[in-house]
Image (cartoon, rainbow, N blue to C red; front, side, top):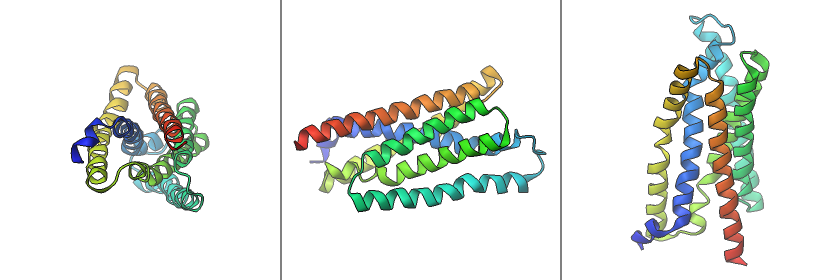
Length: 198
């Protein structure tokens, strides 16, 4: 039934996971041009900023196809969400520690985008594993609605922390922790799923 969605703890857990993903995704997406400019690039050199921005997103387009295809071939879903989220979390840690060094920062940005988009590509197979019919439609809509609040919280979080500390580093540490938390929730869901099926 439609109302069963709001009584299912797994739906609320997936709302939290998707919120964590969107906080990280929109936070980095919104601030990436500024992060790249701080490599020492002329603020008016939009072409170079744009070309460098293509590297993480282009790599992520490939990574999400590989991750999604491998998940489909093996039939495994949870680890194909958990591992990419951990990669993105590690990338945020790397970005915080890299300072304004161009090459380490580009590697970190690529890890973040590859990890987040790869996780998102498989994430939507999780709700339909235990929801069906009207409940599946309602559950997906609810998860999407609450999760996309991260589109507000992510950029705002970085902006507020940057204003308070005059740097991005603490914001990246915070986003890394948020993604780690999301990955841990998926680990718990996986354990509960195994117990339920066993």
